[in-house]
Image 1 (cartoon, rainbow, N blue to C red):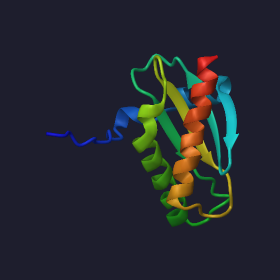
Image 2: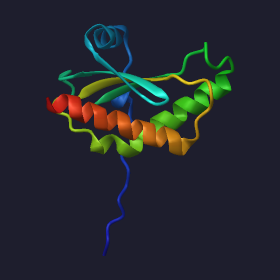
Image 3: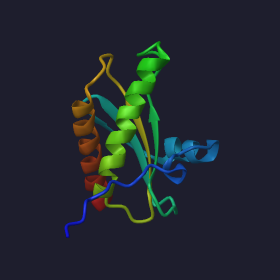
Image 4: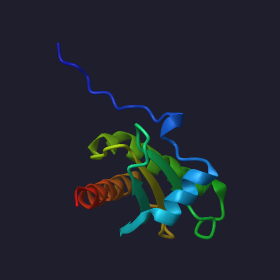
Length: 125
């Protein structure tokens, strides 16, 4: 019988929260851009799994409904593709939405794919 491939869940341990973790990421992380998203990552954090923080600026979208929609789309794209990330001891990642238009889920999915590819390239160095 064939096994159905299931995507992993997005648990509490995979969310980046807390002042120290975020400040370490912003102070010592590497930055990058893909169309529609900016990202900052820090590798070898000592965690078993990679952690992510998603940000949609209030300056771009005043309504919380739109910000929450975009954050949900980014987190879902990450959840479906996080297995593609080549990580050793875990990576902390901040993804910031950076365009004024609301991107479709497919566009966000491709942008997150590019983010993962760039992180893989930079961590292989």
